[in-house]
Length: 238
Image (cartoon, rainbow, N blue to C red; front, side):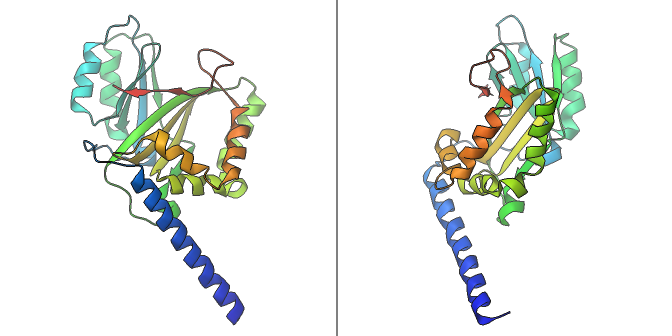
């Protein structure tokens, strides 16, 4: 290696170190202390179980389950949809409990097709206390476009490495995307005490390629209830 190339490599390493240090300060500024969460499963350990409870009243099953589960792992969306975020080893017991309720629909989302992991991406030790933002939408009906959407995610590191860089800068510990047919389920895990609204702008700060990615992806997504509305529907902690 020549002296010039060695100096360049040293400069690049120093710039990466500074970038991560600044990112850590930005994340810390957006966070505050809150009640700890204990659910920190990663990747294929995570399963999302969605149950539809028609009728409007909060079911006793949901109250009982939420009382013994970690914060933000039981969430609700409009239309009496509830999701339960559990480890894979707990899935069968939960599904059995829900099926006993004779619900019209119980859907299991497992084995994410997309998995951003901050520790693998940056080498930094993971946060121990996490909160989880969960969203859902549909892929468009066109099978060709569905295949393109999945391919984009499979090759994101090659085509849009800036997306993972943005996730790391925002302090996201994990971003998972699951599918069941056309339905997509997105889970963003981030340090306890932070909010998604504060962290998400950091993914695009000085990083316009993330905006390009988001614009492309929007062409493959639609709202599960009302086509034409914003595609992603947010669940809220119960």
